[in-house]
Length: 479
Image 1: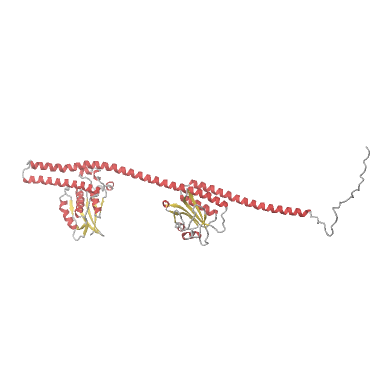
Image 2 (image 1 turned 90 degrees about the vertical axis):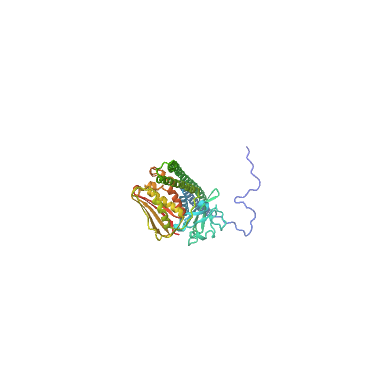
């Protein structure tokens, strides 16, 4: 091929090309050293690394604290789930809150007294006498101050006044309110004296919220458990009372059946005597007037005995219907004793049984119904003479402050400790063999007890047991 022809135009000069005409007085920029840029980049990287390390430490601290709080909440949850006692719940919650926030003082209240008040259940930093006196009203423990009770918050100064000043202490610490609410019911709350340098962080709010819910549920369960326990105890008491009543009714039914049988016999005996003696007199079956008079006397005595039995039954009916009346009035006891003497002396007794009477001079008047007190005294004398086979029966009177004491003491058969417990019950004598041997309806002492109580007096029995005699005591007020 033929060689190419060289360019014919002007050729560029070697070296740096000129950018145009030079301007006079302008210096070219100084070149920047490469080491300065590297140092700036290193400083910026160090700053970022320091900030990242600081954020990492904060995150690690928050994570550690969060982990600790979660472990604490889990531990508390296990304890609260295992207890059904409100006091133990309050103790655990207060201990946890006081430790977590380094509170020197605090207390926990729970709703008590049927929802009428909040009672302190546990305290810290105070003596038991101090925190147990911090009772607060319900449903709002701070009625003078409008308060959202279902939110944890620092209390106003007005809420911390009064008895809660003890929680503030000499440092006048702010009080932090932690409510335990369940189903819109404030079951309790904690109040803590919070150190001024202790801030409530977001993690703290979350932990407090979880603890609030756990505590509220535990308090509610404890309340339900206690209510169920009380209902169970009440049902057990009612069951025991019903069983006791049923036993008493069965015994009363048995005693009443025996009483009816015994009373029928007791009524029939004098009635048979009256009819028999009357028929003998009507038929003229007597030898002389003296024998006829003796028959009429026996008939009259049988009639008196029958009348006494009927009066006892009528008095018992009046007592049970509430229609029995007494009319107390000032009366001389000496007169009453003199009226009783001839009647008691005529009562049948075993041969050799002696009846002793007291000296009744200068006795003060007593406030009694004379006829009813006479009825009581005659009944006691009749029983004493009836149950004494040998020995004596004595009437004793002793003055005591404000009343007179009358004693009817005998050396008779005595009363066993078991029988003493039921002696003043209706038909008590009918339960046992004494009724068959000695007779009687078992109503006399019951009526005497009611009469003495209605007259403001008392009646009691003392006996060392069978074979050791009996002493009946009655007291009557001095007029």
